[in-house]
Length: 311
Image (tube, rainbow, N blue to C red; front, top):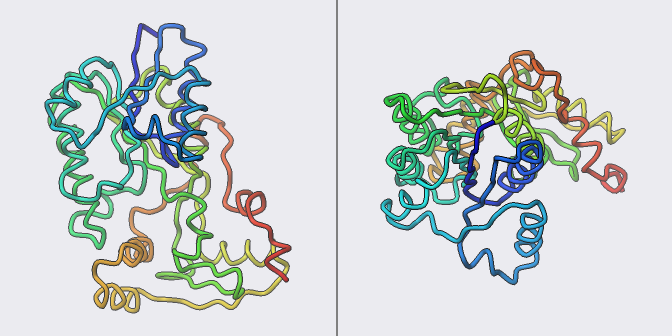
């Protein structure tokens, strides 16, 4: 690979695995350098978790660059033009309001050769415009912008939901304390899930794939699972029966109408509808290339203390 400078935006739950896996992969390429853009306050933070991340980044041989993505576009362009590739791991922290479009425009105006935008998630085009989650429309705007030009090559990685979210109380599906599961949409409604660690590993593989992947949506997945299969996993690992209830789309739609700004209820509506939130595992980059990923069952076995749940 010719001399390449990579700039990664963000070092959160997804950013860290992406950073560390790209850094690991660059050991095979002496001409590739990885830099992470973070706020000055984050780089010098006394927060324990942030300090740990900064130490890990430095130990991985990754450079740190102080900068703020909320700065005017002209400042971002001045930074971005020094890099051949940009991988955005910013998440939705900045909310709606054009943030993702601002980044994409700055990348294009800076003449960056390759861009991995923050599109780690569901298939926004299948879901379409005007969905319950208003943040998704801007993701479609970014795709249209990238497709409207030819100078910057882009790669979108569709990952589905973080695997852990299936097991989190806030999502309102699995309640391990009450031994209950509430399917949303239908028991056969499926969702594709991937761990941040696997997303990081696969992003690095996709980045360095030969021939280069360009102007393409790449689907990855740790597992594609129905809510009925999730219930079966919980019962098998816990050794206990779970009460099974169903929230159909009428109930989910009414919940959202009564609380239209609720972030979780927006997502329950998306994942309950079941469109664009899953794809067959055989279509994924990892399965096609024989790369092992963590299934939902394996994640649950490794990360949940089922014995304590049974007390």
